[in-house]
Length: 158
Image (cartoon, rainbow, N blue to C red):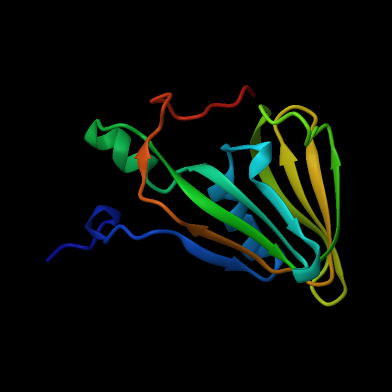
């Protein structure tokens, strides 16, 4: 008998939540290099919710894709932040409907009890800062994976 491998596992859509900084690091790693048109961001003030529909690079599948010689994939996912009291942006022109953003990280500055700020750092000099009463972020895949249009794994200069 041999140990099970990752490849033996059943592939399922991502559906994760983050309630503390440690959880958020995992979620942030999964959304690194996600791209989205600026038109796919919504702040629902009455519901105290910020949501963005992203085209997420499937980092969790990348090693298996390369090992099997198949194309790397993306999937559409909903990134949702709850308990949002305010939203501020820098370097993001919401009127530019052709603008495509690339998400680099999601971080939290504050305390789990007292709230703080969720930061969505974008490639370039852009970013979003969400003032939250409490940290609650979710990520849910909402479509089937599809071949990444570029066919390549994102890279970052060191």
